Image 1 (cartoon, chains in turn green, purple):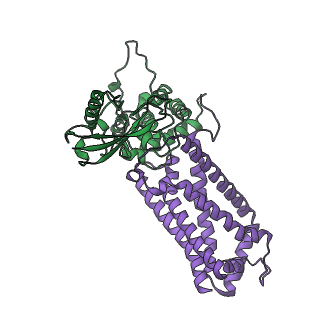
Image 2 (cartoon, each protein chain N blue to C red):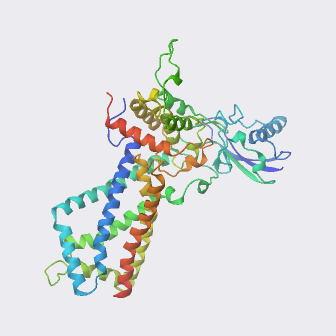
Length: 250
Length: 228
């Protein structure tokens, strides 16, 4: 396969970036998208040019590192797929492919296609946990009975890998799908219910502080999420937050 | 602990957007019921509509509801403006190439544009009828009531302007239909009521509401324009 790539190049966080054109040949249709970028980088290195920086880790679709906006969509054209699990057979020979970083005020570009997603970490630190004593006498989680439906819904929410595709896809760069998944996975379980109010209030407060936009229910996040996290989680977050506002904890 | 302000958080802003929006949906139903009386022709229709117009501007309960409506319109517009500004700021640098139509509907992405069209319409519409009803100039019918019926009929039939106003009215109703097609179901989502079980029903009811109400509104000026 021969391809024409248009890639965002930016030296560092402060630098002005721009789209740069690259022609690449010898791409196998069996390659993953990241392997195609590896091939590009090898040729760039051989030519003495700086390789394109991009995030990647597990390359098996579970770490959420590969944050690439490919041809106008997060993680590219294939639904329920991370960029690392996207294969070049999804593209046509001779096609032009745009590759850009996530665009959001809360996700500043560090270099080329790499963005700083620590805003998500700070949201988790604000309340995305349960306070359990881990000094050796922890109770086995399975010892607490959980209704099957709740367990299933909590597990569905917990499949969020925090990749940020929801923010990238949303026209408002809203992080509601991420935050709602993290609130839901705990609020649905008896272990998480105790701190549900404080959690909802604090995580939403941190989300707003980070400069993410507001949810306007376009549904773009759900459509682009590689893990299929449902909008129903945002419904739950709206409910959890209202419940918390109506029952002040302090 | 988080702030206690009612409108400071992103979610609270959406709650108010939803609450005022749903209240305005109820207002539309009431307003439509009144307008449909314009379809009664002749002296009987004139007297009945003017009697109704008098009731709507003098009954204390209706007065309270109308002030709530003014406040809702203002709040919905201002809150929507604030949200839109924040949302623009959340993505200072746009994508070189983006395909939003792959993942969302045009209406859901253009609520601010549709809302602005509707707001402009409301201002013109209030200047045309509400202002004239309150501060004139306006004639009096045989029962001694202000003759809003004749003002309305004239607005939609008076030469080129009547045609333009009829077309403009229909365009505004299309904007309202599109705005409601997303707004109705979205309000339930923002209030946390669009659960997985109810989602389908809310969306269907929303679409029916969004099509039916503006359609019935639009029929009235078209009928008046064609028959008078």
